[in-house]
Image (cartoon, rainbow, N blue to C red; front, side):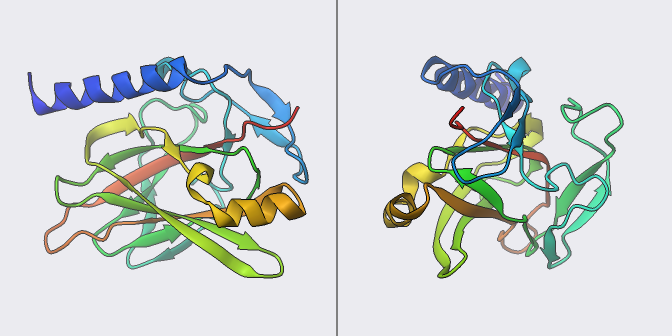
Length: 211
């Protein structure tokens, strides 16, 4: 079995486990306590994940995306091949070594647990780093939760990355006040010399919203 075949099998297995332990939600619109209405889709349905997700602001990198880019990060031609955001989508985010990109904040109910996106790139020693940054209108940054994602030799959806289950005190503080929090996601390629680039596209968060 080739490395690519093993990786594909691993991704499908993780997706199947996730589906087996989560509640199925349909596409539509919904709203978490304290958050504006959010449009829900099922972008990972063909990958055995039937949950409903909302697109992180500008997470499809089409048009004005609003992300903060540094270190050579840029939007390039070429969409993830599954076209989950629409057949007319044509762009993705390119992250060379040392680059970083931070999303606009998204309003999350206390049950927003999971980040997923499409990616390709990296190596065994050059993982993609994702920082989930929790902010508060009065206190500013409350906590940063680091996540990592292993190499992806071809375009695939990421494994489900739990976010709020790791927030500890930050989640408790927010839950006591308004049951919502503001989340930004910072993607970076911190690989060493000769580290290959990453590309990401269609960044979603699973709201598990209050209906």
